[in-house]
Image 1 (cartoon, rainbow, N blue to C red):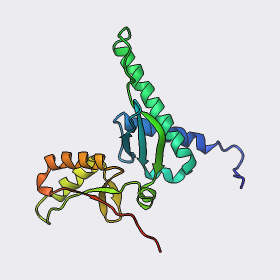
Image 2: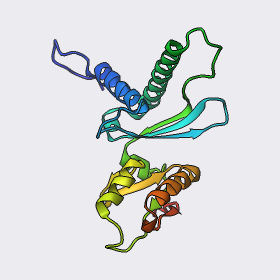
Image 3: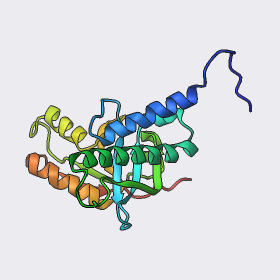
Length: 192
């Protein structure tokens, strides 16, 4: 189907694409905002390449076919910024390893609902404290800092692989042991 727009109106897609890529780069630089994505990086064993899953509700307005290219573009820009910064620190220094990760062929962008329905985040890190044993506000904040996503039932701390889940479990258990953290793997769903 064609897209019909009034004359004089600029193309929204390139502007939107550039804005979302810039937001991804900011998140990679640690300058994210409240509306930032959750980015999961998994080692591939191929140098500095990482498999990437980006969970972000901003993807709702981006066709799935465009998301991978946008993630790779953000990683390329992020890496260039890091290498440029490292070059300014010691321009005459010896050759270095690449400054940052590079998104591999596996770069998936999904909304929270897509990620859950597609089983992209099967590992959960959950607190098992009884009501009143922990401060719920602090608990929620810890989970959000660890990458929790909002769901209809509250915040859920989910991961694409066991290693990331157990790493988060260890960090959370050291910060709030009284929450009795546990890692669980969600079983596959059977559809009728």
